[in-house]
Length: 268
Image 1 (cartoon, rainbow, N blue to C red):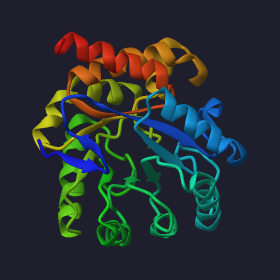
Image 2: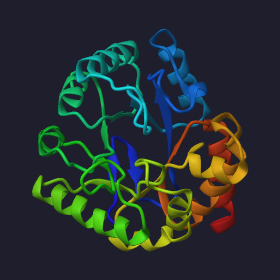
Image 3: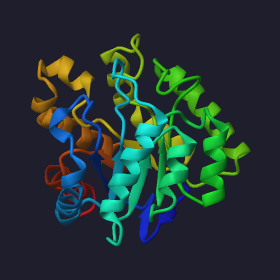
Image 4: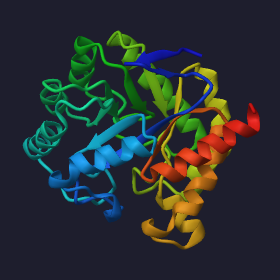
C-alpha cells in the first residue's frame, strides 16, 4: 500500500487515523454536529483532546436536498472558522469541491484536501497539486457519489485515479463514497460496499471509512441521525477489520475506543 505523511501523521500504517468532523454548516443532516463559529475553538480543542488526529472542516452540507450555498458564502464561513483556529497546532482538512474555497483556506495552516467530487473539476486538482497537498478523493463519475453498485464504484474509482494522475496527484486517500449522495442510491448499495470493503484494498491506497450516522444505518435501525451511534460503531469496527486506514467520525471518544479495541484484537 502507498503510505505517506500528513505532517507527522503516517497514513496507511497499520493503526487507523481518526478524523473528526468539524461541521460549521447549520444545514447539516445531523444537526447535533453543527458548531457555530463562536464555538469552533472550544470544539476543536475538545476533539483533539479526545483523540482526533485530523480535523475535517466542512462549511456546507453535501446531503441531497440541502439548500444551495454560494461559493462566496462557503468561502466566508471557511475563512472565519480558520481564523478562529489560527496559531493552534491542529492538522486540518478542508472539505470542499470548490477551488476558490480551498485557495482561500491555503492562506491558513491546512494540511489536507477532501474532495467528494473526485476531481471532477480540474481546477481544484491544479490548486491541490500546486499546494502539494495530499487529498481524499471520493468515487465519483460525473457528480459526487453518483456510483451505485459495487461495479459502478470500481468504474468511478478508475476515473478518479486517472484524473488524479493527470493532475500529478499521488498522495491519495480513497473514499468509496458510502452514503446517499444521489437520490437513486439505496441503503442496500451502501451495505454492499461495506460487505465488500476489503476488495478496495486492491488499489493499494489508504481507504477512508466515512459512515458516521448515515442514512443506510438509520433505514436499518429505524433511528434518526441522533440515534445512530451504536449502528455507526458496529459498521466502523467491521470496516477497520476490512482495511480502513482513516476513520471519519462525529463521535470522537467512542470511535477512538473502537479503533483501540479492534486493533488490540488483531495485534495485541
